[in-house]
Image (cartoon, rainbow, N blue to C red; front, side, top):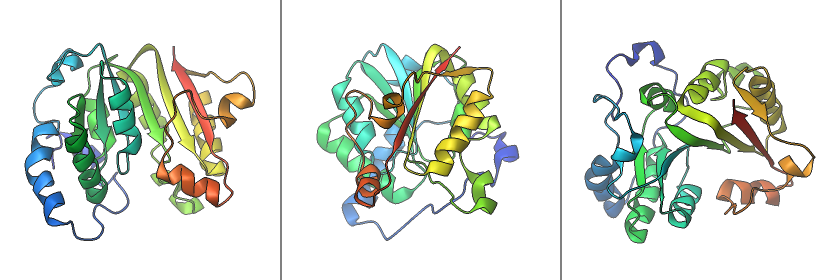
Length: 233
């Protein structure tokens, strides 16, 4: 896995499992052959223009942090071929599932990173993304573990630095304490404004939202999700 050489200050910041059940032969092969072609190499300087990361011309670049099995990432990439997508997922089994889908659909507007998203955010040029999505992140429900949540003042600042003015940070979760936590962190940031004007703005999915398997599970279990959008000043 690739990480920048000066990342010692972040070592240990990534929590949770990195691998689940053993990969099947086809999955292992894609991890060995396809992932190296799509993985961003943070030991090299980032291009001044992130659009250069993609083989076909794209007009803008978005980031998805923690894409799980890649359902939303691939749906967005397929629906928006003129946009470049960077997906971050350190969980190997989720990455393997996404690689299979990317290969099957022939998507050429996705690049991947399989380590802590904080490394990537520090590597990206300032004002290089038009949107960042954080969808159903690990909620770390125990109070003593809340400090492990990805939304923190430091990471909010990282996201703000990477977004263009007017760019969006989108967050979805079915865990009410994490929704409140995120609102608290973003509303005290001088870099963002919450875009909601009425309750339906956070209760209803965004236009074109394909859903995720985590969301389907939450709805089955009676936990209504919240959909938050914050705009970079």
